[in-house]
Image 1 (tube, helix red, strand yellow):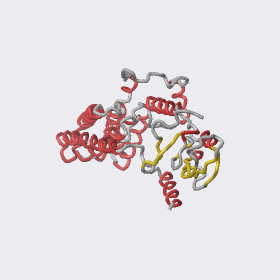
Image 2: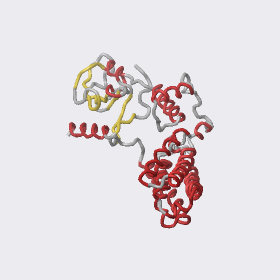
Image 3: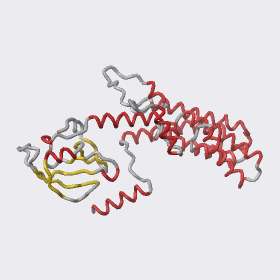
Length: 324
């Protein structure tokens, strides 16, 4: 069974189907936001496009996934939403007018839209669908001409943006637009230490430029991730006297070096670091092997205590605050 689970996990990673690190509440909130956003857009599209509204609603449906499921992503920000749709609509209408053959106009519109969004820094994947709708949307869409970019495209995008701003503001862990996170003032008594000391704006810009590919993460997200990781790391370490039989511990490493051990046997009355204990590797490096070591050696290896949460390992609150 363990081998089957390991192979299944590897297969899921290979095809990019790893479990998103989000709670059930977050998933339900995302679904509710998408419902409200598309309901608003559908009503407007029906009014202006009639039977052809289904094409544009499909385009905005893709935007809803970004704005409500990935509100902190770079592709979800206001300029990406508005610029991506409007620029793509203009490109699509232009291709329709000057390239009579739809077989050529459709792919050309999408290709040019991608290029324009890249140069204008407003990459928004649903924009490609908007460019395509401008070409294959039918007589109702073609009759609008360049007005199509204003009504209903821009109008729908503005409605979606308004719903996203208001809806996401109802939940304290969602900050949309992402820029608002930088402007947020610390609450009274909140930790104000600058955990980003030593990493400047230029460092993040350099790191992203070295990847040489668009990464759907904002600088604010990177800074926040670094801040949380640094705070988490600041309290690492397990005291030899705090080890308990039947508990799980992680070394906190990355990639192939990460591991979780289960202490099988130790004398909890004798906390001498030189005393032996028996443990088993239950996840990561060395999995399913058993070994013997001293309390002190195990404590130096362990970063913090962990527990199993569905398919993820999570740190036990308050563990790893002292180092032996």
